[in-house]
Length: 584
Image (cartoon, rainbow, N blue to C red):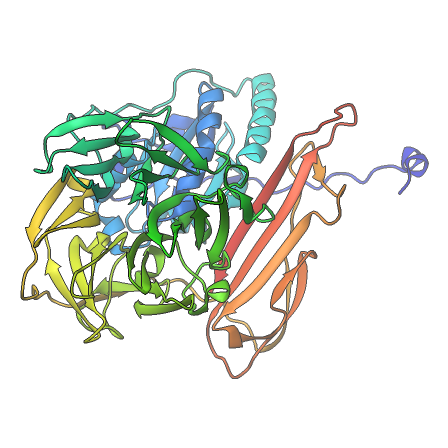
């Protein structure tokens, strides 16, 4: 309708949406970061409440924690963020594990531990992460799944502040957050470790304190501390370069840095400091390309290989050329083997080079995988996103639980830091068998070989633990688990998929350079879709489900770009919105 017509045509009356009262926040694990107080929604009346449904295994949830920090600080007298921890893995239902995660990731708002997903079900949440906005009168006004919504939520918060200030229903002042007492220790949730040549000392990424720590060969005495929050932010992986420098996965800064033990110099070598989004360059000068939560690094075949956990891929950094590029993975999350460019990973978090193989701890599929010299991806242990446990024996039926580290052993086998099983496991390619080397570790995240010993990073015990490599494996009682997600029942044949996107208030789709939306559809197994798979710019798609395939997972990834809609602004700010679904 043109402007002239609209000036003389009465606008239709706006439809009143039914107001939905927010369900109460309940969880058997109780509350953290409240000084021991049990919170209710009545306690939060008068505040704009953002409920963040998260689980600490999920890198997308960790991204959202970082996205919300600015909102949390800028609107601290009107906004209360409430984390509701909703576990995927069995280990994540342990209360102490949630306590550890809240400290590990610097969560500075109240968190409800909901091990039985009671509040998750009340709010009809279906994906990690999900954000729900509740207005000062206790009504749900918005729900967003996925990451990248902080800007839209801030705009909504500003509207709610104005409306409820005028109504007298906005309550300003401090929120219910109470900081826990700090704990003294030399390390705090260390992530990865490296043996320094010559000295025999250990270099450890002291993740929660945002620094590197050099320890003497005893693994306990502190030699020096390197960096801090200004230089590193939750650093993880470490790898030795041929020239003696150490390359560091500076995870939350989305960068790689180098540290020179001889001079103490720290330098950014890859990444812009911005998080990579769909449509961003996937290769080019290393300092000009965005990265996404690099979690580990390894030197293999003349390059630094990067476990890019944030986008479920492996990348490489070439120090000689000063370039980065995608090496394996499609950004789809799952377990698919084959040529590197076609393979799927799920939050790869640990790397170890062993001659002709690059071993990968693929955490969200609870899998041990490897890339061979022909750049083909294989799975040694693991079956998919929803199967995990602690079971030894033939690799085809063995189970891990969210492993974060892998270490090459002298006999050609590998040790797996089986993080959520609190165990060190071993896979022998020669026999195809999985065994348990040690138990009663606390969230082991990496291990370093030192002669006949193996030194394990016990992340949740804040220490390095030296073990003698046992000649015989420890026997454990086999346990298997499966994450149950309700399947959506659909008939075979034609299925219409429509993804609805509404630009946040005050923004419009950015069409200056062509289509501003992208839709990627795929399936596990691929045979589930006989038509409709692939990428396109339309947010609607006709799919064809093969009647011969009775179950599977439909993977949908949608992206849209919007810009501030202000004709007076010559350089409007633009924002990328992305959401990924895995629909059983």
